[in-house]
Length: 106
Image (tube, rainbow, N blue to C red):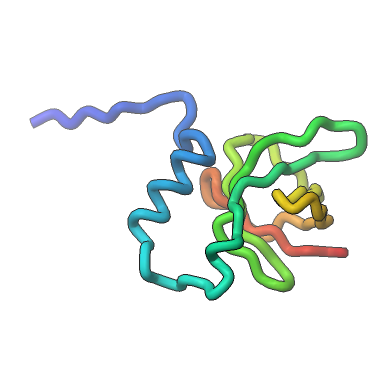
């Protein structure tokens, strides 16, 4: 019996698709009290003068954030711009596929 796989050039899908899928799976788990005011859409910016790109924030704490970004080349340092307009300087801590951990350095 032969197995076939549908492999596309973008294994992660869009950040929005990934977030919705993960939310359906994890509903009821680790819900935060302020979740109703939390907006996952954000921007990620690589370097001075670069245009910000879309990303999704799936978890955020005082010192770090879990981000979904479909860009293959994420540098070691970058800026996250939250939907509130607040920006945070970050350091890449880990990456698995299109999910990454960002430690706030500011």
